[in-house]
Length: 197
Image (spheres, one colour):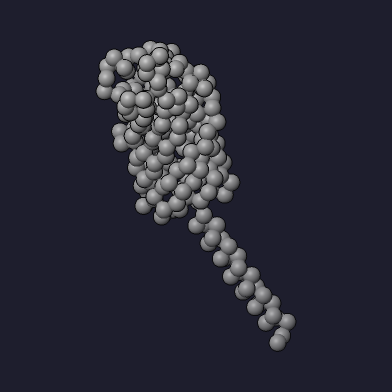
């Protein structure tokens, strides 16, 4: 085999390898962005006491996040309207806003994602963890959310649950001598959001 033919084969193999690498890079998104729809995203809470369980809701004001699939580095902000919280009982809700949440002083709660751990299937079913800072009642708290997700086209269906130990986070304990209330409230965020990459 001549040297020229060797060279042509080597160049062909190199071109094939580089072409395959370039195609793989083109398929891998450099950034994934998720935009949350305040009208369809549900922010719900559950608080138990010795007699019954209270269910309620908050409204999402705005929300978006983005992350690099290669490194997991994330950014963005989700903003919850604390003053919108309601449980269906006016007397209880007024006490919740005035004495516990102090929503006139702290009208918003925010979550700022910092890191996504795991692989988000685009499309498909997957589960990732999102580490970030949750700010409520004027203080920052580091939390990690476990997020099962399903992506179909540009729609991402997600849900996550987490506890807020509000008493240890500096908010008032609503328990009385007669009525004992759980020291943590369970939060749930769910919805179908827009994903782009």
